[in-house]
Length: 269
Image 1 (cartoon, helix red, strand yellow):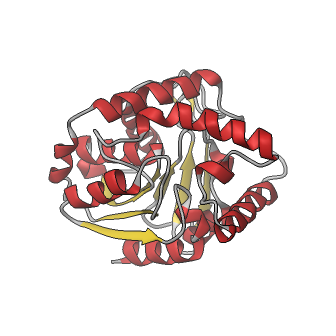
Image 2 (cartoon, rainbow, N blue to C red; image 1 turned 45 degrees about the vertical axis):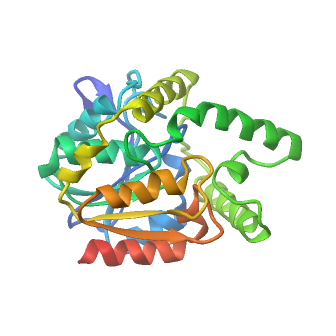
């Protein structure tokens, strides 16, 4: 799909009709990084749309370095599909984009799920670059994937969940894979995250009247659960909160069956 001359890559799965659920993914991610167990579970009841925003994966153009611009790209994508209103699921960086869309374009959103994300001014996002580098170093030393350290806890059960998650990613797409993100895209995303942590405008979330489901692991070492997730649920006036035990930034993947059920129940209300 071309939007003002820029191609946007996306996938649709699930039902052919009904209010769409649009998924916005994390820093460094593209379409293939969504857990098939989550996508398929949601698609059992919903029309699900996954999108690479500008400059990400196979989408063209240059990735913007502000969340306001990413939110504008999201709305332009909805316009191009002819979608007046959608539900949003934003994970990590995508959760920030979803927050901005809800604040700046509230009429375009019905319900929102915010997973492993943080409000403006919360600790964590500015250190994402260093966290990614440290996880990459550990992964190389121990022969593991960086997501073992970024998304999951050191416990055996959490590391087993990491293995299962990574296995699902490998099994889902064997051809027509999306394009890995570029260093330029990662740099722009990290710039946006640094600005987000320095932003003091989280009070604007108090005006977001949409029903919101806020979820995370109980020990998110990337964007701390206590200062990010719990604060987010506190500031939003119509939020429900779910915290998963012995899990981190990838809690929705470790507890994918629980998360999918909670998400579908929330979206049905």
